[in-house]
Length: 317
Image 1 (cartoon, one colour):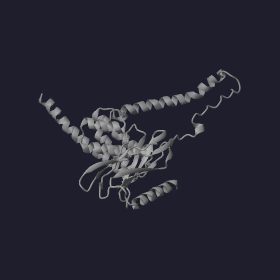
Image 2: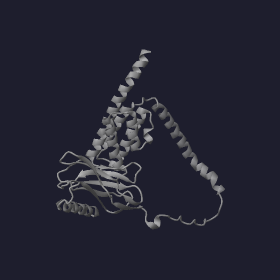
Image 3: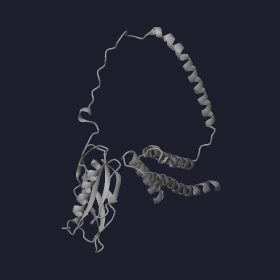
Image 4: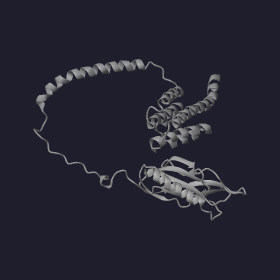
């Protein structure tokens, strides 16, 4: 109910601002956040509204969030329909405590004469971010130890009966462990799938699980599977890398721009569902699974082309 009320207040403010005549010809950008006080990890709805600039053409806004910064982008920016000058909605998630200033938002605008300028939010509002723990729970005290009841010391008279009772359990555990070792030895003879085939098998399984289990579970396995593929294919420790470090890896390896964007899109959907608490629908999950497969196809083509000259040189020796 409170989320609907906040959205209604923001929409009403946009309509009033859009209906008022522009007093300045120079373009400007204003930010409005709701609510102004949240707990860490809760979403904050932000509206970026253009002001002034009659007849100017506005581009898409860019939000200055960094992987180690106090904010994460969980949704948007998406245009607000029926508002002129334009406005955009976005959802931010605070990751640090205290008074946190909203990240800077910038939009490129072009005048009727063809001049292009970058319009920034001059004074972003602040949001008070508190802990998820109550004030009295911030430093919980341990419960005092209770005095022992009954006789102290080890009950040696129970040692032999206890060992006799455990003998069948120990024998069963030994038999199970021996059978497990034989099964592992047989399993080790099976061939290991190539990295791209292993990823494709995982993506096919995740495609079948969409709609049957929570989006966070699908995104967990999707992000882990893509990292494992990149680690096996490149030899880099991708399984331990953050999403930002994966982008640096793709850029350092010189992958095609298409492959870099696909990897970034997959990780953005996975991180938004797992860490940003962003609702993720079945269509978006299937699109992310498809992007992961397409990213692997681009990376395979690029690396195969790079490895071909080396193989040709070894064959000629």
